[in-house]
Image 1: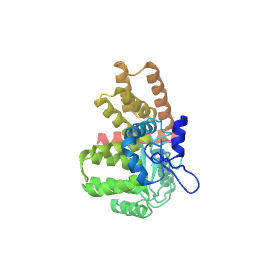
Image 2: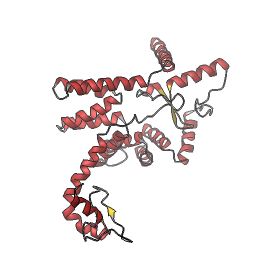
Image 3: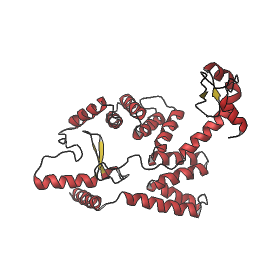
Image 4: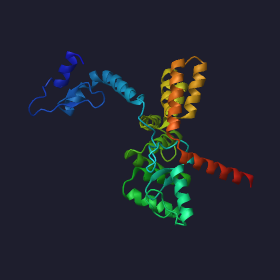
Length: 305
């Protein structure tokens, strides 16, 4: 920060009042470059500040958007503490506690219950398994009463499956407000299709970006595809690299295609390949391998009938 910019931060950018004693200056929340002593001063200064403000706000947003998330949006299995796999078939959602359990822990729990002839219960909270979809939703509603963001997302999905898009929008909105990244992703799709709410391109990409920033690989991949369609390959490559680093196969495939077109460097592709493999390896365990083998056997048996 230059000396001139530092002086601006000590005084109101509009009237020049210094921020001393009982005079509190507040930053422009969009760009953080200047401060004001009142809303009146901020409004009066807006015409001359607007252009610089928008430019800096866009730069700050990009810094946040293109930062590699620490992990995936799913997080870890609460039992084995290994990262949850991206494939939804390899994990189970428990409506009783609104936790997602990896297939390995669920399989181990089923084996234990079967061997000891125990009642089927949630591997995490030990609530008896629901006997019907309605009982499952009743448990989700209890979690909604506790303001569980995951419960709002699950109820939104249920509404969407029944064709109640308005209900889905309301539940996803509440879930997103409470920080659920899946709800942000679902909202972006509703705004794109105009289901339950009017089409809104700005809100569509806002929610898509919020999900991507939090570590949602599919949202990140969709942003990359949009940037490609908009003829911004440099930005698209950044998105695909981040998603590939999180273990998304589709983004790694896009990077390979763009590499053949000369849009991705050899070094970037090699780094993405290593990071992708490391991310996938993090989700592996002997217990999960056994569960996947059992699942494949069941699917093959069902297909042969």
